[in-house]
Image 1 (cartoon, one colour):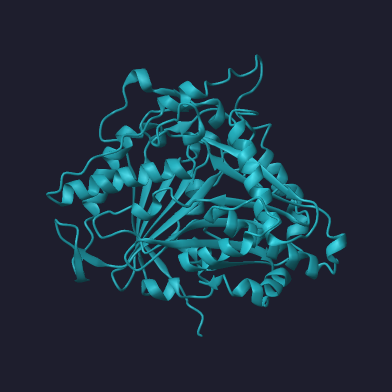
Image 2 (image 1 turned 30 degrees about the vertical axis):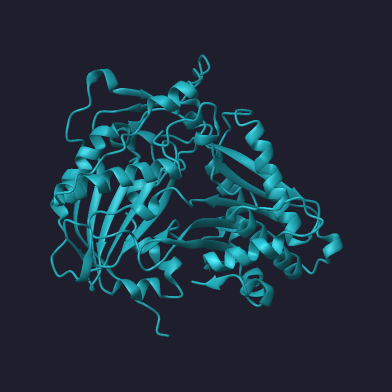
Length: 465
């Protein structure tokens, strides 16, 4: 297959500001203690839409040759920022945001290929950076003053076929995946409300619930709160560069449809296993954990008995785990780290059980050790250590701007050695925008990925995508 030469032409760049000025009483926004502990780093989201005509009833038929209503997208975004006003401001410390309606960039581009050319390319994960907002708009990790870092950057990419990719960088300091889903669905609902006769309700964001549940921690006296001397992410990356340059990391995506997940659940429930009803997350994650650890041991020529322990780190959304539960529209990093471990390479069911027990223990002690110092930086490679981010069931599959639900959601914008042993999960979407299982994005050292893909026991459940 001929390699896709992706070219992206920027048509316009505009700063979108809130439609209504932020009141003077709200100019200084103080973050919850959870967000105070979060990193100044951005995460990407890409939503892909094939071009389908829509009418006021929400049905669609055939290709749409009408241009996308850019004006409505922008005006609705401006109104959205009035409700999500901290996103349009700029951070002025680890703890506060100056909300002076500085705005966020909105870039419009044209792409020189069809949407499916990109999505079907075996190198798509290496090309996605070209349809994400410019690095100069979002770069962080100490590479520019925090008061210059935009909190959200948006790029609308229109392909030759009329298909669209709307891509985002969002600041983890303010938003987690669930918060991003609230923001995107609010904006999309406003667009639909302006473009149809439907009565569309808006789920208002709740910033106050997070702050009340997790009050800000006052900064220490006589301590510089700018974060300039305490950039854990930058230090971790810098210390790891020499090692990273010596390896090749590859990124691949795999799909577990509903049928495969059902069979996998049956497989991991054994007679000597207390776990009788694993969740889809537990089953798929345990399956992946077992096989990628086995691939790492094979690549390192380690027998099973000498593999040593393996650990898995992931975060859990604690909104609905609290008593009383927080609103689902609560904005912020309302997450808790979970750690699971097995002592040696073992049966898949034991990996699944370890995950289940770690989640159960976390549920008993949701508020223990909060806030945590969160950093998305790779703290250095260690055999058998993996990190996972799960973005399933966060509403990203529902983001409909009037041209249908997304056909694909991709939560990654590059392939880089710093992502080694990193796993991302999103809902796998069917042709109608419904959910059919889980899509997993996996980043491994090249030899480990080759071993994994040659494993017939892995491939019987995981379909390359």
